[in-house]
Length: 77
Image (cartoon, rainbow, N blue to C red; front, side, top):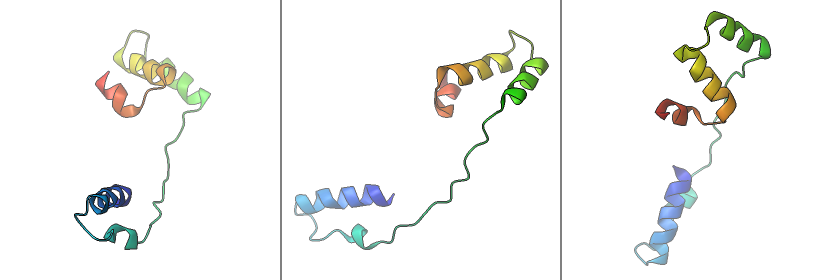
């Protein structure tokens, strides 16, 4: 949000709509990113043993593993 506001106000300064960019006076903050657990080969084998070929769960897992799509894109697919 901060980056967006800085760019927006920079453009407003360029157009002479405002004199200064107040977003530059805000403090940066760090976001603690925990991340996501990456499945191990053993976990993938366990999933495949549980879900037979041809099931939606197995298809979804294979699409996510082998197409390198984002999670949000996979939901759309």
